[in-house]
Length: 550
Ligand code: FSO
Ligand code: SF4
Image 1 (cartoon, rainbow, N blue to C red):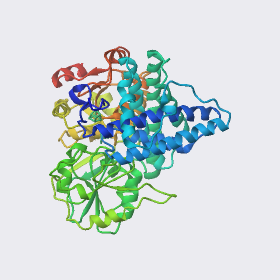
Image 2 (image 1 turned 90 degrees about the vertical axis):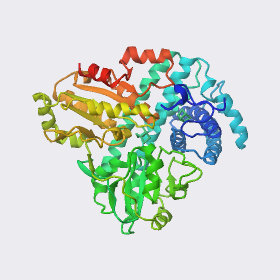
Image 3 (image 1 turned 180 degrees about the vertical axis):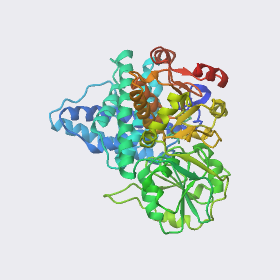
Image 4 (image 1 turned 45 degrees about the horizontal axis):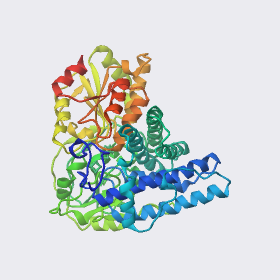
């Protein structure tokens, strides 16, 4: 075994990647990620004690968030960035420890040498990681619960980072993240206590998604119904992927008037729905499909690509686009160029990338037509009367929440088939890149309400919850589960884990999860989720359709 990772849906053989990651993560990078997480558990023990003394270390909060985000599936493949991050972490940990001692705090006593171990040697880091990774927790149920918490925290970190970039910080969320990380080293915690921590993680997931929703809509306005073009124009282009809207804002400002057009890829598609971005004439529309289609989309795009977050697919040997791809923020890939973070309140500097973009031909058109989106909570509330009337009259029989992620495995065609076979009196509520399985199908509308209502990015699943709660209020129901809404959710990486935990913490029951259940759920932990929340794996399209419609 060279490594062990089972954090995403594509975990090898449905159990875990042991030789190399299916995502392309090397054993060396996997080791450094394990060590970074281990280190966070040490730092968090000090910062949690400092907090009890009313001492907040904003640099620790930032470090923990960045580090967790960097370890999300296919966000960052850059060995050197992880080595540097770990070295920075040792310094931060020791600073937190000194501060604790100076302030009369009690230094934690723990069997975890994450409180003391350090090195600046990359090979020693790799060797150490072999003893502190996921499998170092022997009991498979405790391991499962600890990892469920950690993967949820990774999702919280991603959304927290986007909020931070827009000036929104919630110290309660930071405090929770660090307390929870520290708790994963506490051998005295029982399965029940860890299960409670999992649910608390979900609650914090709701809180962080609400914060990000506020940050995005305050800065850029409420998403509104928008027709997004899928074709191309004649100028050279920049294709922006990922989730960070602050990056989007700065890119649009810096490209205005340069003769370079901007297109979205994958999860950046919902940027098209924001009033503040729609005003830019050189913001053309969306190019291509979900994250995994980048291997062909980037070829035909011809121009420069910017990753603001995951999901990066390591380019094939034959790829011609490698030297025109840039990463920024938590994302990284050794062969791509990286754009540094903001410093001193200044925007990121995209000038070199824009100059580079000007040297390329316009994108090759791969499709034409349009898609419609922008159905986040404010827009749906504006249509509430119409929606409620359609439900009351029976024109809409049921809603299907089909949020989450797309992935490259063949069995994901389930979601396309499911959308196609849904009766015409049903509406799909979606968010996240899962939508690419059906957002270009001609599914029509119900009295002017499109049958696929796209709220936005995976974090905008929050909008779907707000919509569900509003409908429950309108229909005077005490329980969201009484609504005619079924949940058939697709997952891939850890942001989907926090979306799932957030839904559970809000009391949503009977969620179907696919295309497979997470490898990190031990049979006992899976049973707890099945017994208490009615979580179920997907079956065949026809069986599931019958089940959902009855
Ligand atoms: Fe998709 Fe990737 Fe948004 Fe994820 S692009 S898979 S859940 O990163 O974050 O939906
Ligand atoms: Fe495997 Fe997923 Fe981990 Fe990558 S992130 S190594 S594909 S389990």
